[in-house]
Length: 270
Ligand code: ADP
Ligand code: MG
Image 1: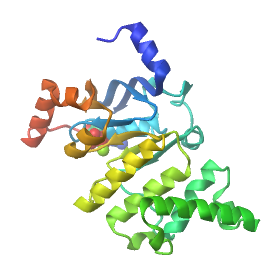
Image 2: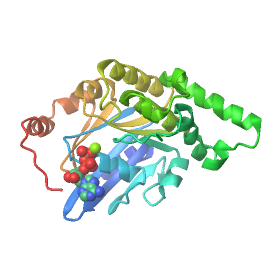
Image 3: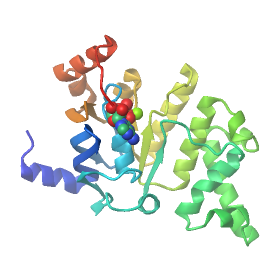
Image 4: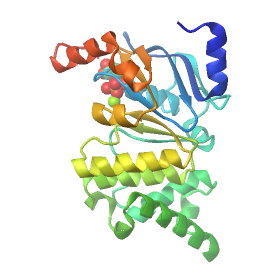
């Protein structure tokens, strides 16, 4: 049980502090009074069965959706009322559960697009840069990011001709181009083969050791349990557990939520 004083303390020391987050779709409460604290420098897992409200949470935190109630504070600043583009400027970047790369752009251009918000360039500026120096600088930074994710050799390839896993890496590089303080990752490992999964897990660890804070929605339990510092578990839109991986793994309510899912008895009206 968290006392009000503890709650205030947690909020003060958290990079991300979510309180009472609620979002309804018609008669369905997809996210129901959720509290979530992400400490700086950590990978925080957000898990739960299908339809438990994880993506809706990410959409609410990143400003894609408006909450019906609750607050989202990033380093003490309220985000819930900021438009999406302002949220990015405040240090928050994300990847999408359904990949969103620009198919007609090259891999390099996809990453360059990420800079337009972080440096205050418009999309047009990025592609018709006035000075060679500025162009060179952005190009070098984008190449650094591509090197970091291991895609520098694909810089000139059209994003659509990449494998699913490679497109995910482009999304991650583009997210990093914003130099975020907090990166939200919505199922970044979906559709990846085992060696791609290992590669991304290594990247996420390196990103954490470089000081980046991440909120990771992920279904692969082995990965979540091995790389997350803390985990929050949702079920039917509500937070049913939070704590360190070993605490969460042993929680009876969490076990029963996942057993329900694996036996196919979870049915939820949308
Ligand atoms: P998860 O990411 O955990 O699988 P979601 O956040 O996508 O879950 O969905 C939570 C619930 O909200 C589901 O029942 C889903 O059908 C519903 N939902 C999500 N988005 C919408 C929407 N735009 N309109 C209506 N219902 C939605
Ligand atoms: Mg989802």
